[in-house]
Amino acid sequence: MEINTIELLSVGIDIGSSTSHLIFSKLLLERDEESPTRRFIIQDRKIIYEGKIIDTPLLNDNTINIAELTDFFKQEYKRAGINPDEVQTGAVIITGETAKKQNAEEIVETLSNDAGNFVAATAGPNFEGVIAAMGSGAKDRSKNYNKTILSCDIGGGTSNIAISVNGEIISTSCVSVGGRLIALDSEDKIWRVDDPAKTVMEHLGMDYQIGDLIPKKDINKIAETFAQVLIEVITGQPTSLLAKKLMITKNLDFTNSIDFTKSIDEYMFSGGVAELIYGGNGTHNDMGKILADKINLLTPKLSSPVIEPLNKIRATVIGAGAHSLSISGSSGFMDDKLEFPIINVPVIKVDIEESKLSVQQVVAKINSSFQRFDLKEGKETVALYFKDQLKNSYPEVELFAKSIEAALPNSIVNRIPIILIFENDIACSVGNVIRRETGLKTNLLTLDELDLKEGDWIDIGEPLVGNQVFPVTVKSLVFNMVNNG
Image (cartoon, rainbow, N blue to C red; front, side, top):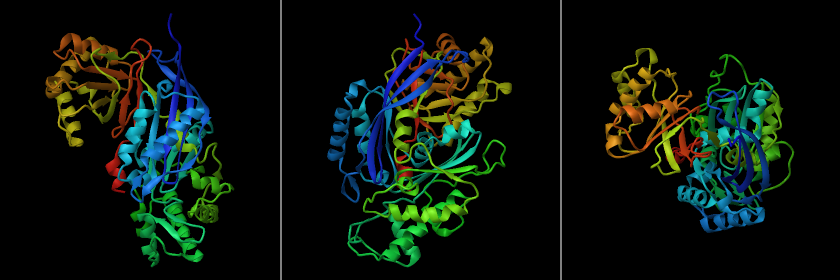
Protein backbone atom coordinates (compact mmCIF):
# COMPACT_ATOMS: atom_id res chain seq x y z
CA MET A 1 0.00 0.00 0.00
CA GLU A 2 1.42 3.37 -1.03
CA ILE A 3 2.11 5.88 1.73
CA ASN A 4 0.63 9.27 0.91
CA THR A 5 1.08 11.14 4.20
CA ILE A 6 3.90 11.45 6.73
CA GLU A 7 3.78 13.17 10.11
CA LEU A 8 7.01 14.41 11.68
CA LEU A 9 7.65 15.80 15.15
CA SER A 10 9.95 18.82 14.94
CA VAL A 11 11.74 20.96 17.53
CA GLY A 12 13.00 24.51 17.25
CA ILE A 13 15.51 25.76 19.83
CA ASP A 14 16.65 29.39 19.88
CA ILE A 15 19.61 30.54 21.98
CA GLY A 16 19.60 34.31 21.70
CA SER A 17 21.49 37.26 23.11
CA SER A 18 18.71 37.99 25.59
CA THR A 19 16.53 34.89 25.79
CA SER A 20 16.38 31.18 25.03
CA HIS A 21 13.34 29.01 24.37
CA LEU A 22 11.92 26.17 22.27
CA ILE A 23 8.80 25.03 20.46
CA PHE A 24 7.56 21.63 19.28
CA SER A 25 5.67 21.33 16.00
CA LYS A 26 3.88 18.60 14.08
CA LEU A 27 4.67 18.72 10.35
CA LEU A 28 2.23 17.02 7.97
CA LEU A 29 3.71 15.88 4.65
CA GLU A 30 1.47 14.90 1.74
CA ARG A 31 2.18 13.82 -1.82
CA ASP A 32 1.98 16.57 -4.42
CA GLU A 33 -0.10 15.16 -7.27
CA GLU A 34 1.17 17.89 -9.62
CA SER A 35 4.81 16.95 -9.08
CA PRO A 36 6.35 14.72 -11.78
CA THR A 37 7.61 12.37 -9.06
CA ARG A 38 4.63 12.90 -6.70
CA ARG A 39 7.08 14.29 -4.17
CA PHE A 40 6.07 15.00 -0.60
CA ILE A 41 5.49 18.61 0.42
CA ILE A 42 4.87 20.08 3.85
CA GLN A 43 1.13 20.65 3.84
CA ASP A 44 0.56 21.80 7.40
CA ARG A 45 2.51 22.93 10.45
CA LYS A 46 0.96 22.90 13.90
CA ILE A 47 2.70 24.17 17.02
CA ILE A 48 1.94 21.77 19.85
CA TYR A 49 4.07 23.25 22.65
CA GLU A 50 5.47 26.71 23.29
CA GLY A 51 8.08 26.60 26.01
CA LYS A 52 9.10 28.99 28.73
CA ILE A 53 11.31 31.94 27.84
CA ILE A 54 14.40 32.37 30.02
CA ASP A 55 17.31 34.80 30.06
CA THR A 56 20.18 33.11 28.22
CA PRO A 57 22.51 31.95 31.03
CA LEU A 58 26.12 33.08 30.87
CA LEU A 59 29.10 32.17 33.02
CA ASN A 60 30.77 35.47 32.07
CA ASP A 61 30.75 37.96 29.21
CA ASN A 62 32.33 35.46 26.82
CA THR A 63 30.96 32.06 27.85
CA ILE A 64 27.53 30.41 27.72
CA ASN A 65 26.56 28.37 30.77
CA ILE A 66 26.21 25.00 29.04
CA ALA A 67 25.13 23.06 32.14
CA GLU A 68 22.33 25.46 33.02
CA LEU A 69 21.14 25.76 29.44
CA THR A 70 21.07 22.01 28.73
CA ASP A 71 19.30 21.37 32.04
CA PHE A 72 16.63 23.94 31.11
CA PHE A 73 15.94 22.30 27.76
CA LYS A 74 15.83 18.82 29.32
CA GLN A 75 13.17 20.14 31.70
CA GLU A 76 11.28 21.63 28.77
CA TYR A 77 11.16 18.23 27.08
CA LYS A 78 9.73 16.75 30.29
CA ARG A 79 7.15 19.55 30.63
CA ALA A 80 6.07 18.92 27.03
CA GLY A 81 5.88 15.17 27.66
CA ILE A 82 8.26 14.50 24.75
CA ASN A 83 11.24 12.16 24.65
CA PRO A 84 14.17 13.21 22.42
CA ASP A 85 13.88 9.87 20.60
CA GLU A 86 10.45 10.96 19.34
CA VAL A 87 11.79 14.11 17.66
CA GLN A 88 12.48 13.49 13.98
CA THR A 89 13.66 16.86 12.72
CA GLY A 90 14.20 20.50 13.61
CA ALA A 91 16.95 22.99 14.25
CA VAL A 92 18.97 24.51 17.08
CA ILE A 93 19.90 28.07 16.17
CA ILE A 94 22.24 30.36 18.06
CA THR A 95 21.60 34.01 17.32
CA GLY A 96 22.88 37.54 17.74
CA GLU A 97 25.73 38.34 20.10
CA THR A 98 25.47 34.86 21.66
CA ALA A 99 26.91 33.39 18.45
CA LYS A 100 30.15 35.23 19.25
CA LYS A 101 30.66 33.52 22.62
CA GLN A 102 33.73 31.34 22.98
CA ASN A 103 31.76 28.10 23.37
CA ALA A 104 28.92 28.95 20.98
CA GLU A 105 29.75 26.22 18.48
CA GLU A 106 30.12 23.65 21.24
CA ILE A 107 26.76 24.44 22.81
CA VAL A 108 24.79 24.41 19.57
CA GLU A 109 26.35 21.09 18.54
CA THR A 110 25.72 19.60 22.00
CA LEU A 111 22.08 20.62 22.02
CA SER A 112 21.44 19.42 18.47
CA ASN A 113 22.89 16.01 19.31
CA ASP A 114 20.66 15.72 22.40
CA ALA A 115 17.52 17.20 20.83
CA GLY A 116 16.46 14.21 18.71
CA ASN A 117 17.04 12.62 15.32
CA PHE A 118 18.18 14.88 12.48
CA VAL A 119 18.09 18.14 14.41
CA ALA A 120 20.41 20.60 12.67
CA ALA A 121 22.94 22.81 14.43
CA THR A 122 22.83 26.26 12.87
CA ALA A 123 24.19 29.77 13.11
CA GLY A 124 24.47 32.68 10.76
CA PRO A 125 22.92 36.14 10.51
CA ASN A 126 21.46 35.74 7.02
CA PHE A 127 19.86 32.43 7.97
CA GLU A 128 18.31 34.11 11.03
CA GLY A 129 16.68 36.67 8.75
CA VAL A 130 15.23 33.90 6.58
CA ILE A 131 13.69 31.86 9.38
CA ALA A 132 12.43 34.96 11.21
CA ALA A 133 10.65 36.03 8.01
CA MET A 134 9.06 32.60 7.90
CA GLY A 135 8.23 32.37 11.60
CA SER A 136 6.79 35.89 11.82
CA GLY A 137 4.46 35.25 8.88
CA ALA A 138 6.09 37.86 6.60
CA LYS A 139 6.97 35.39 3.84
CA ASP A 140 3.46 33.89 3.69
CA ARG A 141 1.81 37.31 3.90
CA SER A 142 3.86 38.54 0.94
CA LYS A 143 2.51 35.60 -1.07
CA ASN A 144 -1.09 35.76 0.11
CA TYR A 145 -1.42 39.50 -0.51
CA ASN A 146 1.00 39.87 -3.45
CA LYS A 147 3.17 42.31 -1.52
CA THR A 148 6.79 43.20 -0.96
CA ILE A 149 7.38 43.04 2.80
CA LEU A 150 10.49 44.02 4.73
CA SER A 151 10.65 42.08 7.99
CA CYS A 152 13.07 42.97 10.76
CA ASP A 153 13.64 40.70 13.75
CA ILE A 154 15.13 42.78 16.58
CA GLY A 155 16.65 40.69 19.33
CA GLY A 156 19.11 41.32 22.09
CA GLY A 157 22.17 41.74 19.90
CA THR A 158 21.22 41.99 16.24
CA SER A 159 18.47 42.98 13.84
CA ASN A 160 17.99 40.37 11.12
CA ILE A 161 16.28 41.71 8.03
CA ALA A 162 14.64 40.06 5.03
CA ILE A 163 12.73 41.25 1.98
CA SER A 164 9.93 38.90 0.86
CA VAL A 165 8.35 39.28 -2.57
CA ASN A 166 5.30 37.19 -3.47
CA GLY A 167 6.34 34.37 -1.15
CA GLU A 168 10.05 34.43 -2.00
CA ILE A 169 12.79 35.80 0.25
CA ILE A 170 14.99 37.72 -2.16
CA SER A 171 17.43 39.55 0.12
CA THR A 172 18.68 39.33 3.71
CA SER A 173 20.93 41.41 5.89
CA CYS A 174 21.96 41.94 9.50
CA VAL A 175 23.05 44.92 11.59
CA SER A 176 24.22 45.14 15.20
CA VAL A 177 21.15 46.79 16.69
CA GLY A 178 19.57 45.07 19.70
CA GLY A 179 18.05 45.60 23.10
CA ARG A 180 20.75 43.98 25.21
CA LEU A 181 23.88 45.50 23.74
CA ILE A 182 23.83 47.49 26.96
CA ALA A 183 22.28 46.02 30.11
CA LEU A 184 21.54 47.97 33.28
CA ASP A 185 20.48 47.10 36.81
CA SER A 186 17.65 48.81 38.67
CA GLU A 187 19.96 51.70 39.62
CA ASP A 188 21.10 52.30 36.02
CA LYS A 189 24.48 50.73 36.67
CA ILE A 190 25.93 48.97 33.61
CA TRP A 191 26.41 45.21 34.03
CA ARG A 192 26.88 44.33 30.35
CA VAL A 193 28.19 46.27 27.37
CA ASP A 194 28.91 44.61 24.02
CA ASP A 195 31.25 45.84 21.30
CA PRO A 196 28.55 47.45 19.09
CA ALA A 197 27.46 49.56 22.07
CA LYS A 198 31.08 50.60 22.63
CA THR A 199 31.20 51.63 18.95
CA VAL A 200 28.11 53.81 19.38
CA MET A 201 29.42 55.33 22.61
CA GLU A 202 32.71 56.18 20.91
CA HIS A 203 30.72 57.82 18.10
CA LEU A 204 28.86 59.90 20.69
CA GLY A 205 31.98 60.82 22.65
CA MET A 206 31.05 58.62 25.64
CA ASP A 207 33.18 56.13 27.54
CA TYR A 208 31.12 54.08 30.00
CA GLN A 209 32.35 50.77 31.36
CA ILE A 210 30.80 47.88 33.27
CA GLY A 211 30.01 49.07 36.80
CA ASP A 212 29.48 52.72 35.79
CA LEU A 213 26.27 54.59 36.48
CA ILE A 214 24.91 55.99 33.22
CA PRO A 215 22.56 59.01 33.17
CA LYS A 216 19.16 58.41 31.60
CA LYS A 217 19.81 61.12 28.99
CA ASP A 218 22.89 59.24 27.77
CA ILE A 219 21.24 55.81 27.58
CA ASN A 220 18.41 57.52 25.68
CA LYS A 221 20.93 59.04 23.28
CA ILE A 222 22.58 55.66 22.71
CA ALA A 223 19.22 53.97 22.04
CA GLU A 224 18.18 56.81 19.74
CA THR A 225 21.39 56.41 17.73
CA PHE A 226 20.84 52.66 17.37
CA ALA A 227 17.26 53.34 16.20
CA GLN A 228 18.50 55.85 13.62
CA VAL A 229 21.00 53.30 12.28
CA LEU A 230 18.27 50.66 11.97
CA ILE A 231 15.95 52.98 10.04
CA GLU A 232 18.87 53.95 7.80
CA VAL A 233 19.56 50.29 7.01
CA ILE A 234 15.96 49.27 6.31
CA THR A 235 15.22 52.25 4.04
CA GLY A 236 18.20 52.09 1.69
CA GLN A 237 21.94 51.62 1.47
CA PRO A 238 23.61 52.73 4.73
CA THR A 239 25.69 55.83 4.05
CA SER A 240 26.86 56.89 7.51
CA LEU A 241 30.19 55.61 8.78
CA LEU A 242 28.51 54.37 11.99
CA ALA A 243 25.92 52.29 10.13
CA LYS A 244 28.64 50.78 7.97
CA LYS A 245 30.63 49.84 11.09
CA LEU A 246 27.60 48.14 12.63
CA MET A 247 26.72 46.07 9.55
CA ILE A 248 27.41 42.33 10.04
CA THR A 249 26.54 41.19 6.52
CA LYS A 250 26.29 42.76 3.10
CA ASN A 251 23.67 45.47 2.62
CA LEU A 252 20.12 44.67 1.59
CA ASP A 253 19.55 44.51 -2.15
CA PHE A 254 16.51 46.68 -2.81
CA THR A 255 16.66 46.13 -6.57
CA ASN A 256 16.46 42.33 -6.59
CA SER A 257 12.68 42.07 -6.73
CA ILE A 258 10.56 40.46 -9.42
CA ASP A 259 10.14 43.64 -11.48
CA PHE A 260 13.33 45.35 -10.20
CA THR A 261 11.37 48.51 -9.36
CA LYS A 262 8.84 47.50 -6.72
CA SER A 263 9.19 49.35 -3.44
CA ILE A 264 8.45 48.07 0.06
CA ASP A 265 4.68 47.77 0.62
CA GLU A 266 4.80 47.00 4.33
CA TYR A 267 7.28 46.87 7.20
CA MET A 268 7.05 44.27 9.95
CA PHE A 269 9.01 43.93 13.20
CA SER A 270 9.49 40.75 15.22
CA GLY A 271 11.79 39.62 18.03
CA GLY A 272 11.87 40.53 21.69
CA VAL A 273 12.11 44.28 21.07
CA ALA A 274 9.09 44.06 18.75
CA GLU A 275 6.97 42.90 21.69
CA LEU A 276 7.61 46.38 23.11
CA ILE A 277 7.25 48.19 19.78
CA TYR A 278 3.68 46.92 19.47
CA GLY A 279 2.71 47.91 23.00
CA GLY A 280 3.84 45.00 25.15
CA ASN A 281 5.10 45.52 28.68
CA GLY A 282 8.12 44.20 30.52
CA THR A 283 11.59 45.19 31.57
CA HIS A 284 14.66 43.01 31.13
CA ASN A 285 17.31 45.20 32.77
CA ASP A 286 18.49 46.40 29.38
CA MET A 287 17.71 49.15 26.88
CA GLY A 288 15.08 47.14 24.96
CA LYS A 289 12.11 49.30 26.02
CA ILE A 290 13.98 52.53 25.33
CA LEU A 291 15.09 51.23 21.91
CA ALA A 292 11.50 50.25 21.08
CA ASP A 293 10.26 53.72 21.99
CA LYS A 294 12.94 55.38 19.86
CA ILE A 295 12.06 53.16 16.87
CA ASN A 296 8.39 54.01 17.27
CA LEU A 297 9.26 57.73 17.09
CA LEU A 298 11.00 57.15 13.75
CA THR A 299 8.59 54.75 11.98
CA PRO A 300 6.23 57.57 10.85
CA LYS A 301 9.05 58.57 8.49
CA LEU A 302 8.80 55.22 6.67
CA SER A 303 7.20 55.38 3.24
CA SER A 304 4.88 52.42 3.92
CA PRO A 305 2.83 51.24 6.90
CA VAL A 306 4.13 49.12 9.76
CA ILE A 307 1.99 46.03 10.40
CA GLU A 308 1.98 43.67 13.36
CA PRO A 309 3.16 40.10 12.71
CA LEU A 310 1.53 36.87 13.77
CA ASN A 311 4.56 36.02 15.94
CA LYS A 312 7.01 38.40 17.53
CA ILE A 313 9.45 37.12 20.17
CA ARG A 314 8.87 33.55 18.99
CA ALA A 315 9.40 34.24 15.27
CA THR A 316 12.92 32.79 15.11
CA VAL A 317 12.19 29.68 17.16
CA ILE A 318 9.03 28.99 15.13
CA GLY A 319 11.03 29.40 11.93
CA ALA A 320 13.68 26.99 13.21
CA GLY A 321 11.14 24.36 14.27
CA ALA A 322 8.48 24.62 11.59
CA HIS A 323 10.16 26.02 8.48
CA SER A 324 13.75 24.76 8.32
CA LEU A 325 12.97 21.43 6.61
CA SER A 326 12.92 20.74 2.87
CA ILE A 327 11.87 17.48 1.21
CA SER A 328 13.58 16.04 -1.85
CA GLY A 329 11.72 14.67 -4.83
CA SER A 330 10.64 11.03 -4.78
CA SER A 331 13.05 9.87 -7.48
CA GLY A 332 16.43 10.00 -5.83
CA PHE A 333 19.21 7.43 -6.06
CA MET A 334 21.14 6.17 -3.03
CA ASP A 335 24.00 3.78 -2.47
CA ASP A 336 22.88 1.59 0.42
CA LYS A 337 26.34 1.81 2.01
CA LEU A 338 25.94 5.52 2.79
CA GLU A 339 25.42 6.44 6.42
CA PHE A 340 23.01 9.18 7.51
CA PRO A 341 22.67 11.89 8.54
CA ILE A 342 25.23 13.57 6.33
CA ILE A 343 25.80 16.94 7.98
CA ASN A 344 27.38 20.31 7.26
CA VAL A 345 27.68 19.90 3.50
CA PRO A 346 28.42 23.07 1.50
CA VAL A 347 26.35 23.58 -1.65
CA ILE A 348 28.39 24.43 -4.74
CA LYS A 349 26.50 25.49 -7.84
CA VAL A 350 27.74 24.20 -11.19
CA ASP A 351 26.57 26.17 -14.23
CA ILE A 352 26.67 23.73 -17.11
CA GLU A 353 25.47 24.79 -20.54
CA GLU A 354 23.17 22.09 -21.86
CA SER A 355 23.50 23.36 -25.45
CA LYS A 356 27.30 22.91 -25.28
CA LEU A 357 27.32 19.73 -23.20
CA SER A 358 30.61 17.86 -23.33
CA VAL A 359 32.86 16.03 -20.89
CA GLN A 360 35.40 18.83 -21.14
CA GLN A 361 32.83 21.51 -20.39
CA VAL A 362 31.35 19.75 -17.35
CA VAL A 363 34.79 18.94 -15.92
CA ALA A 364 35.91 22.54 -16.38
CA LYS A 365 32.75 23.91 -14.76
CA ILE A 366 33.08 21.59 -11.75
CA ASN A 367 36.76 22.47 -11.33
CA SER A 368 35.87 26.16 -11.49
CA SER A 369 33.19 25.70 -8.82
CA PHE A 370 35.67 24.05 -6.43
CA GLN A 371 38.18 26.85 -7.02
CA ARG A 372 35.52 29.48 -6.32
CA PHE A 373 35.22 28.12 -2.79
CA ASP A 374 38.95 27.51 -2.34
CA LEU A 375 38.23 23.79 -2.04
CA LYS A 376 40.19 20.86 -3.41
CA GLU A 377 38.32 18.03 -5.07
CA GLY A 378 38.58 14.84 -3.05
CA LYS A 379 39.29 16.50 0.32
CA GLU A 380 35.77 16.83 1.73
CA THR A 381 32.12 16.14 1.01
CA VAL A 382 30.31 18.78 -1.03
CA ALA A 383 26.94 18.90 -2.78
CA LEU A 384 27.21 19.78 -6.46
CA TYR A 385 24.01 21.61 -7.41
CA PHE A 386 22.88 21.68 -11.03
CA LYS A 387 20.10 24.21 -11.51
CA ASP A 388 20.23 24.08 -15.31
CA GLN A 389 17.89 21.82 -17.23
CA LEU A 390 19.45 18.52 -18.34
CA LYS A 391 17.48 16.57 -20.91
CA ASN A 392 16.37 13.16 -19.73
CA SER A 393 17.67 11.37 -22.82
CA TYR A 394 19.99 8.40 -22.42
CA PRO A 395 22.86 9.72 -24.59
CA GLU A 396 22.89 13.07 -22.79
CA VAL A 397 22.61 11.54 -19.31
CA GLU A 398 25.37 9.02 -20.19
CA LEU A 399 27.65 11.85 -21.32
CA PHE A 400 26.91 13.72 -18.10
CA ALA A 401 27.58 10.58 -16.05
CA LYS A 402 30.99 10.08 -17.61
CA SER A 403 31.74 13.77 -17.02
CA ILE A 404 31.05 13.34 -13.30
CA GLU A 405 33.44 10.38 -13.17
CA ALA A 406 36.13 12.37 -14.97
CA ALA A 407 35.69 15.44 -12.76
CA LEU A 408 35.84 13.68 -9.37
CA PRO A 409 38.71 11.17 -9.50
CA ASN A 410 40.05 11.93 -6.02
CA SER A 411 36.61 11.78 -4.39
CA ILE A 412 36.07 8.36 -5.96
CA VAL A 413 39.48 7.04 -4.84
CA ASN A 414 39.06 8.47 -1.32
CA ARG A 415 35.52 7.06 -1.04
CA ILE A 416 34.09 10.46 -0.20
CA PRO A 417 30.28 10.62 -0.63
CA ILE A 418 29.45 12.12 -4.00
CA ILE A 419 26.27 14.17 -3.73
CA LEU A 420 24.60 15.49 -6.88
CA ILE A 421 21.49 17.65 -6.54
CA PHE A 422 19.22 18.78 -9.36
CA GLU A 423 16.43 21.31 -9.39
CA ASN A 424 14.55 19.16 -11.91
CA ASP A 425 13.34 15.55 -11.59
CA ILE A 426 16.28 13.71 -13.11
CA ALA A 427 18.16 12.32 -10.09
CA CYS A 428 17.05 8.70 -10.46
CA SER A 429 18.06 8.55 -14.13
CA VAL A 430 21.45 10.14 -13.45
CA GLY A 431 22.15 7.81 -10.52
CA ASN A 432 21.27 4.67 -12.44
CA VAL A 433 23.28 5.64 -15.50
CA ILE A 434 26.34 6.56 -13.39
CA ARG A 435 26.15 3.15 -11.71
CA ARG A 436 25.70 1.34 -15.04
CA GLU A 437 28.08 3.24 -17.31
CA THR A 438 30.96 4.38 -15.08
CA GLY A 439 33.36 3.06 -12.46
CA LEU A 440 31.58 5.05 -9.76
CA LYS A 441 29.77 2.18 -8.02
CA THR A 442 29.52 3.30 -4.38
CA ASN A 443 29.11 6.38 -2.17
CA LEU A 444 26.72 8.04 -4.61
CA LEU A 445 23.62 10.07 -3.69
CA THR A 446 21.50 11.95 -6.21
CA LEU A 447 18.55 14.14 -5.18
CA ASP A 448 16.20 16.39 -7.10
CA GLU A 449 13.35 18.91 -6.82
CA LEU A 450 15.29 20.98 -4.30
CA ASP A 451 15.62 24.74 -4.64
CA LEU A 452 19.05 25.69 -3.28
CA LYS A 453 21.53 28.48 -3.77
CA GLU A 454 25.28 28.67 -3.66
CA GLY A 455 26.50 29.35 -0.15
CA ASP A 456 23.83 27.20 1.50
CA TRP A 457 24.86 24.46 3.87
CA ILE A 458 22.70 21.35 4.14
CA ASP A 459 22.13 18.35 6.36
CA ILE A 460 20.64 15.24 4.72
CA GLY A 461 18.67 12.91 6.97
CA GLU A 462 17.76 9.23 6.88
CA PRO A 463 15.50 8.50 3.88
CA LEU A 464 11.78 8.03 4.43
CA VAL A 465 9.11 5.96 2.69
CA GLY A 466 11.24 3.07 1.49
CA ASN A 467 14.28 5.21 0.67
CA GLN A 468 12.25 7.39 -1.70
CA VAL A 469 12.26 10.70 0.14
CA PHE A 470 15.12 12.54 1.82
CA PRO A 471 14.65 15.22 4.47
CA VAL A 472 17.05 18.10 3.90
CA THR A 473 17.72 21.02 6.20
CA VAL A 474 19.00 24.09 4.41
CA LYS A 475 20.91 26.26 6.84
CA SER A 476 23.91 28.42 7.54
CA LEU A 477 26.81 27.27 9.68
CA VAL A 478 29.35 30.04 9.36
CA PHE A 479 30.57 30.69 12.88
CA ASN A 480 33.65 32.48 11.59
CA MET A 481 31.47 34.91 9.61
CA VAL A 482 29.48 35.67 12.75
CA ASN A 483 32.63 36.12 14.79
CA ASN A 484 34.07 38.52 12.28
CA GLY A 485 30.99 40.72 12.55
